[in-house]
Length: 128
Image (cartoon, rainbow, N blue to C red):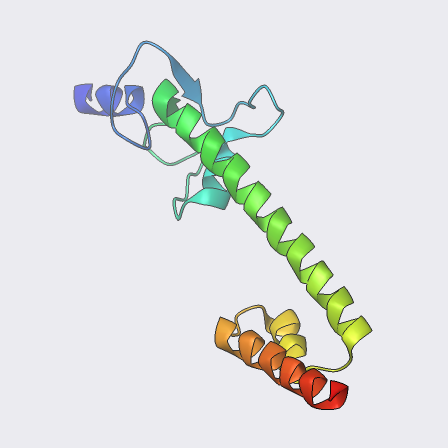
């Protein structure tokens, strides 16, 4: 029983015990729920009823906040870049590789580069 009590006092992410601990069920100052941030950033599943700790230490709490913010910003940037790319192909004409990239999101960069190179070659031929 004593081991179980010690386990409940440790950080769920690093297994450390510190003076300042946060419940995974509380929200950050920005209004994000700690548990949701863990779900979105890591392959860790936490249930209210599981016997493991439901706390994170201050260091992990801060790292988690930074990671969550970074991930959110990176995904927003990717969406903006895809939107710009979509606008570019709508203005420049059809490019199968870029259209495929926009539909699935996992096309290698070489496809996109090949498309632009083809467009540049075509533009060079037309302009002469």
